[in-house]
Image (cartoon, rainbow, N blue to C red):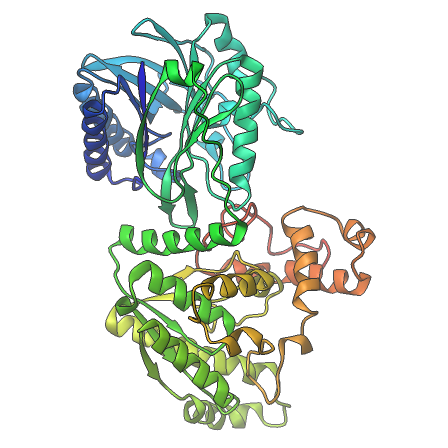
Length: 546
């Protein structure tokens, strides 16, 4: 039997486009001699559909897509993920299902059993778990058809569920496993994905054909990396990252062949770079936007976002605005101008000193007798935010936020100022990772001026200001933040690992008291296992570590 894996990029709720794409891939698979073409989890509706699943019309349109695909299942079978209405009154109204379509009709439906409710996932909010487990008989083969998480209770140290669906399916003696998935990207997730699937094929002594989404749905990124493993647990093939792909595999060759390509190991910074470029491109493309705008300060963060945007959208579609104040150094302005010229982006210089003084003149009677400080610094940031939003409104360009994860974590940013934007590009990239990313961008020649990378970080909101005057050195700070945010370690755990107790106390307090800021920021492109946003839920009004 020949099995085609269709690693595709679908669009949430774009039923016509999703159907057209799957019909096209079905025809391509037929031309390549495939007996079955396999599409990802919830491919008819896109992932994650979230509360659209609560609309009957949304489900009805998904069902129409399945019906049209069934008609196209002529001379080829189709496996596709789609929601299914639960006919039983008790329980949730929907199942998350894998459909097997053949001979012009729906032959079988297998529901998902293990419903993840952690990080970005909230499937138990919508779906009922499967209560029956069957196999598909097709062309003298017995096929185990499962959905994503149904493989993830095996091969990990902390199983989240009480049972494994494959234990039930094995009673029917399947010949191989087909897993349709929506497995989001994180820079270290691909290796974990392989380990989990290898554990499954080893335990059940079956080959596995695993297809994943590719593309971006707002902040959630999918890297593809679909896999074929033989029963020995060897990776026969791993499909490309961050691009659509169709490949056909012969089951006998997978079972018996020695052609094992292995995994496509790529380093962390390369993955983060490619994921962010895809995330920007998909956000603009799926929303119908073309042009981006950002404030270019001469610092490393805005430089990174400018390069990523230019690579995603093209330099002609990126506009940079330089907004020097009385505290901006000449080299920062020159560095920002040089970067824009290196990229070939349009740039405008809009000095804010006169605007700032007008504000101070207006406020002086009300601020009389009060010392200058943070208010005046934030005022500069908010003037810049207002100017950027004026450009955005006037020309229709989407403002990109340039705050990094370290800044977002400790609140080192100004609401309605430098935290403005429709999309947070590097909000899941720590400051130390920003420096690595900048060096990666310059690997084939200087794109980001070297001075931007080597000069001490500064917001330049007062004379001689440096980040180090307000924050610990970024290598030390980022290590503490990572242990707290990603690893969920306690203050004592972090201190015992060698961190300075005062640094730990200060950093964790800053993280928690600035939750209110993060609740008001743009969606953050997710590249780690624990990004700020939909996958990290903390109360604003809380005492813990405050």
